[in-house]
Structures are given as C-alpha cells and as structure tokens.
Image (tube, rainbow, N blue to C red; front, side, top):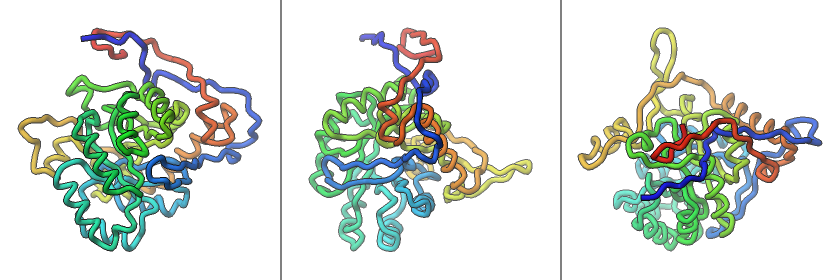
Length: 349
C-alpha cells in the first residue's frame, strides 16, 4: 500500500485566470481544431466535442442534429443498435458525424465482423472501443487486434486516467485515448469501488503523455457547465465527450414523462441496473451496479444547449487572449479556489 501526497484537482477546484487580450469580440475566436491521427493517417477539422455512447445521448438523432450544425461535432453511437439499423444508417446517412462503438465481448466482435461483410463497411472510418476499465491486458490485446483488423480507421479507446496507460494504449494502436474513471453525473464507480482520479489532473497528466507520442486524448465525464469544457481544453484535452450536458433533448430517442405539469426524460449510466436490465437481462451476480438513474428536465431543442457551450468556450478564449481553441491550453493559468484536505484514501474533501 502507498499514498500519493501530490494534490490532484477536479474542475470545481480551479478557475482560469484572465489575461490581457487583443480580441474585441467573441466572434473572432475560432473554436475548431484540426488534427491528423497517428495511426489512421486521417485528418479531422471541427469543434472537438463528442456525444457520449450512452442511451439517450449517443443516438442517431443526435448525430443527425450534429450534422445539421455543420461544424464537425460527432456522436459516439451507443453499442446497442442492432446490425441492420447500423448498416442502414451508414448506407443512407454516411459516417461524417458518427463513431461506431463497441466493447470487447465476443458478441461485440461478432457484430463488427458481420458489419464488415456489408456494403456499409467501406464507410466505417471511426471506431470507439469502450470499457469501464481500460487497464486490463485483455483490453490492450483487443485494441491491437482491432488496429490490425481496421488499419485505416481512427480508433478511440478507453477509459484510463494515468499517463503510463495512455502511452500503452497509443502504442497498441489508439489514435485517441478516452480519459476518465468515475466523474460522470450518473456514474457511481467512485462510490461503489473507491477507484477514480480527479478529472482535471487526469487530463493534464494524460495529455502530456499522449502528445509525446503524437497521440490525442478525449476527456470523458465530469463536465456539468460550459466552463468545465473550457477548463478541459485548457488542461490539454484534444476532444471532450459529453453525456449529461447533452441528455434530455429531443435527440434522446426516449419518451418524455410529464409530472405535475413539468416534463422530464429518464437518464441513466450504462453500468446502472436500468441499463443492464434493458440490455443484458439484469445485473450479473458477480458485479454491482455502478451507475444511477435520474429524471432530468426536458430541454427541448439541442441547438440552444450547443449555443451555450460554444459561446462559453469562445468567451473563455477572449478572457485569456486566445484567438483559437488551439491556443487556449498555452494561454491557460489555473487558480486553485478550494482547499485540498487529504484523508487516508487520498481523496479531496
């Protein structure tokens, strides 16, 4: 047993210090990024925000809404669309705004193999390989196999929270590594297992490791307000994945519940009992639920939320004099605003 004494920070623990700026207006800020991926060799240009591969968020309707925005937003489709539905989507609507999501089970691999035998296979250019615990040898070996199987696809894989594992996954074939264990609004992993890592520090450390190998990182989880995205990008994240902030809209592909004159949509973590009952027939006897189910206010059209998010990021850039999102991390100085008290578990209180 060992205890790390270094302070680790979350989004709520810091603010971004303002600096002198020559920018006269938020509209002068370019919040698109351009990347060339290490292994696929493909390029990306757009606003680097990804809808999480969760029920109600990583939906085809979300991808369609993103496509209508026309600025490169992408959605990681949840894993539970059936083969025919996926094939039809790719054939009819293309691949520009979607990631094909999968786990590492034999069923996931069988579905991918079946997809690759269809005409839609030529459009499979982005794959998200997603597991709760990216530290297993099984996961690394599976990633290597997928890189060999899909040499021209951009692969995003995770989740991890430490630099050495980011390096391992990049060397195994990941173009982008997803960073985050336990920060999501409907994730209870930290409470159920005691495992996790403050998200801001995870981004800083993992981005440093990834960029040294020409890889990229995607911050996954923990953003609750637009300012959190600015902090994530300021800390070095190349992409930010959102769940709760994009939940509750018309794109949820879920029923709207009305109670006492107010409208709600159910939102749940993909390791919750709700998700496991829906997709796996229940919680397996060897595990526990690591997610929760909540009712969130119905938010209507997605466009209003996206305007707030993009406007918040642009405004943050103007406060520090960054003319583009690319400059934000170079112009960011974080100021600690909470006192860290380490208990015996190394957690902040």
